[in-house]
Amino acid sequence: MIFAANFKTNHTRASTKTYMEDLKVKLVSKKPEDKVYIFPPSTALDRFDGDFTVGTQNAYATQNGAYTGEIGVEQLEEFGIKAILIGHSERREYMDETQTKVAEKFDFFKEQGFEIIYCIGEPLHIREKGFESVMQYLLAQFEGIDISYDKVIVAYEPIWAIGTGRSATVDEISTTHRALKKAINNKPLLYGGSAKPANIKEIISIAGVDGVLVGSASLSVESFSEMFLA
Ligand code: 13P
Image (cartoon, rainbow, N blue to C red; front, side, top):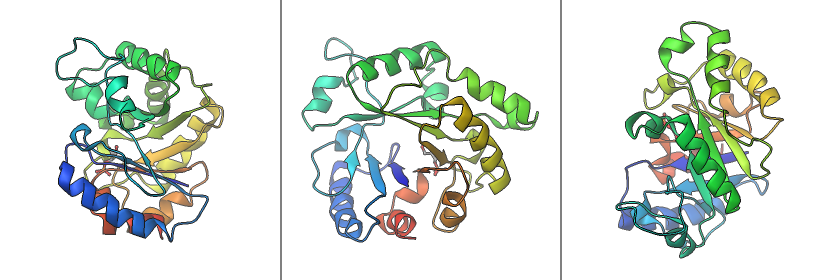
């Protein structure tokens, strides 16, 4: 299983350092086949010691250059970072990342050999239209994306389940993952959206779920480690 923590705009450089130290201790007891990823805010990126991979929540599709406020590959290489989240619904929505932009970013980081956690997810009004509409919406988020890339992990995060405390139901996850798995040639597929200690066992036991991408419940090392130690 894959357990990935997306801190979003939470934690400082100092609190991330403490988190990573505590995490390292917890990870000693994790199942050897499980993989843990942490995506701290970019100001907290660094080299950390422990059985986990540090990735960036975002970067600009450049080595370096004149892109005020952005970081590129040069800034990530300083810390040996080779994993990135692309296509998160919050970036698509608040930062106006269109499918074209997302696909360009994907291509660039693919060329750089990054592990890409590629996020997709539908808003509530699409879910309410029924399953066919959901799949149509989700499949459109693969436009321009080379799903055959060997270092891609897909994360299905229904927008209405993100940060709401209300996860998708077992049935919703199960049907969506089954259809997505076919569409993505069986690539690893994570679920995200209010995953937490109380529902983790149920979620990771669903066929077609290869792990979770966790926001709120990853912010405390106690809660996040409870998930991979469950
Ligand atoms: P929550 O776990 O807070 O719902 O966030 C999920 C998410 O968006 C992870 O990328």
